[in-house]
Amino acid sequence: MIETESISKSYTKDGGVTVRALHGASLTISKGEFVAIMGPSGSGKSTLMNILGLLDRPDTGAYRLDDQDVGSLSVDQLARFRNEKIGFVFQAFHLLPKTTALENVELPLVYAKGGVSHDKAKAALRRVGLEERAAHFSNELSGGQQQRVAIARALVNDPEILFADEPTGNLDTASGEEVMKIFAELHQQGKTVILITHDSDVAARAERVIRITDGEIISDQRSEEVLSATGE
Image (cartoon, rainbow, N blue to C red; front, side, top):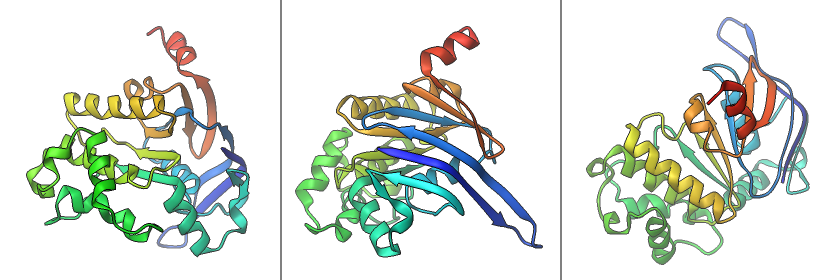
């Protein structure tokens, strides 16, 4: 499903200093995999997610998604491809204030071919166990509930791939466990889940762990191999 070949990305900071965020990253992710991408802050893992999720383009290298050469797509084509195939969940939830849970979940449907559907949005909330909170505003929900609404929003267009960037980073342990159970269930239902994290306990829930440091992929192992190597 996902194949990159030597992709690199650099940014120019204030003062004209060039920062290499990603260098020569090559990987393959198959349909239905549950993959964690690990690395410390500033390692390049979020840059990699942004490129894989079609939010950014690499400076060099090739990226194919579902046998489509992403580099050949226009901005509008990228947006359409992204809306149809990809769902995003972020650490900060990114829910609109003074807007109900249902209205937040409906947002991606505004840009979808079928238009807004209350039934689809309610079904997405049902999948994360929050249908009864549909009429509650964002500020009336706990952090864990807000993240579950964000997951429902990511699911509403039934994407093939879910990207989650530090989804438990702002949650307490119990809420984080609830969120990780949802991702595990979605994976069991056939979704491809790609999780960005610096937390080894969170990464251990995935089937496979890719480690990135200073913009380079330094290891790619099955989770059981990682646990065996660390003695856990």
